[in-house]
Length: 263
Length: 327
Picture 1 (cartoon, rainbow over the protein chains, first blue to last red):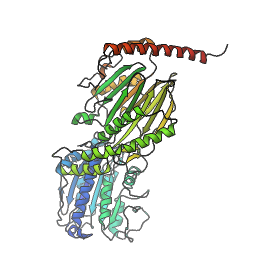
Picture 2: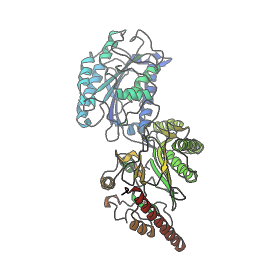
Picture 3: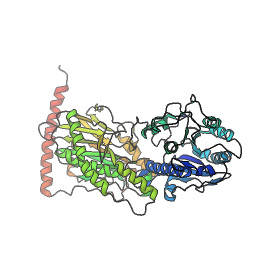
Picture 4: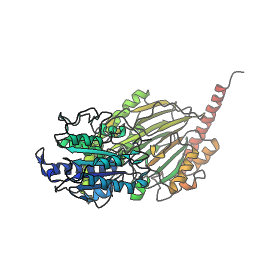
């Protein structure tokens, strides 16, 4: 039964895959800075948070395994394979550079191939999560939805593979998000303002309650049933989206909402 | 005060006392052993012929250097409890513990601020640790004082967080200490107590055993001898997933054994016949144990013990009369 409650530990690390759109439009401004810089910073912040969630004293336990792919007209492996958070802490998070086209399907196919190889050894681990960040519709390589839906059918005992989408745009919602901390998320009832936003919603998993608890500890208020879709044109929404990607529970217990780390 | 080392394993260790035995063990997690880092649990205690105070602390891993808060807290609690007057009730005791812990934050702030990170850490780790430093170092605890001298024997226990504490009476039944703490409760070295201090105060008369331990033992019930034997054997090949610490006070010694123990030097697991062989992992794990007794000290101790045993026997006889039905 899917539960998404297996904690990320050294023995059962969580696998997180990042698919990052580095098309030319990522060089455009977001809140006075190039989008690509905002994304790079948010990625750095989630890495810091993962390290914080993995420390014991001054050592970092390998609770997370991470892969990062940047995509434009081709897919680039930014880390040279899957790295533990311990290794990532040594390497640092790579800075992103805007390139040319947007081939989201190729990125998802890369993720699918990796998951097929990895899934057999993840049977006791938390369900893997794919965090896809884009600022616009694909313009080459075709529709990513079929391969994304195929990935969402892949599973381990903890649950189906999770996909979240961070859509850096002001064209996804009819009402802009004023306060990321108070925002309840995208549910199936909320009308989307673009066809591609609808597509991304279908490509986004529901937020598991264990993830919602972790997000609540960070001060976010996502409603039950919300999708893992974070559409917006503010750095706060980008930050929220990346925070979600590091929200795999790290303890078996499900404490009440608080701002406390867990022992 | 005896402080159990955090940088190595301490097998189940028994110290004989005139009132029974103090037992403790400490095991680092597999991760800590692999990376050769200290454990974040901490045990400190102090005792004489009629009094013991103890603290078992569970440092919070994702706070700033959790073992630091555990040490500050453990040492502070044991020292404070040693001198504290008998609390009239649990509510008062909980309030006193809270005040004592909040007063410890001066020392906490000093130590957290002064803690030197190892040189050459990668920037990402430094940033994560500095974020944690701002948040503070945190620990949960169970603590207690057992007072057996004077006209009345008493026990005061307090706990914060989900580390278990238990007492067993002379009939082998669990004493109802009230609800267990919650994982969200902890002491922060910068800001003090978070959550509710739980406390219990009562007579020691019918209590046979008091124990506090960290959740690293992985038990849903107070550890039995079988549990300790099994864990000792298991940990020799498979270290615990989390740091594990236990402090166990036995107050109902068998008379012959008590005499033998009092006359013998402190027993360590390696020498104790009741200790599982698997638990005997001597890696320089000797704690700062009491110095050997001088001749006059031993004579005094024997005298006091004889007196205590006589009183114990008298009390036992009185109790026997008391519990027997009228006939």
